[in-house]
Image (cartoon, rainbow, N blue to C red; front, side, top):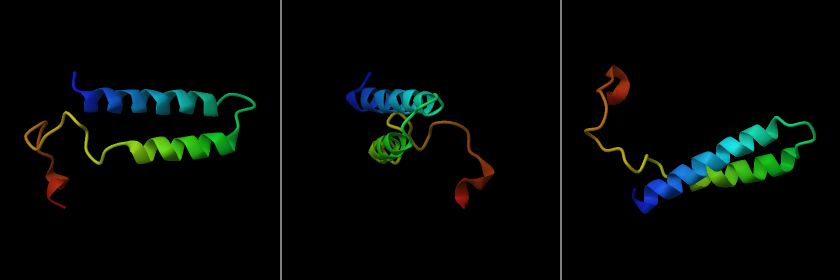
Length: 63
């Protein structure tokens, strides 16, 4: 797997763990907001392994 893919997968896993933590009693909402924002900002604008030819064409893609 490529390095970009590894980084993307790790970031998504950390976001998932953060979401689980956020639903725990006593979770720190400031921590969740700060870390969640930072993790979301670190995601690429496109998925590393996707390309223009990947997946089906959807009617709304031209918008």
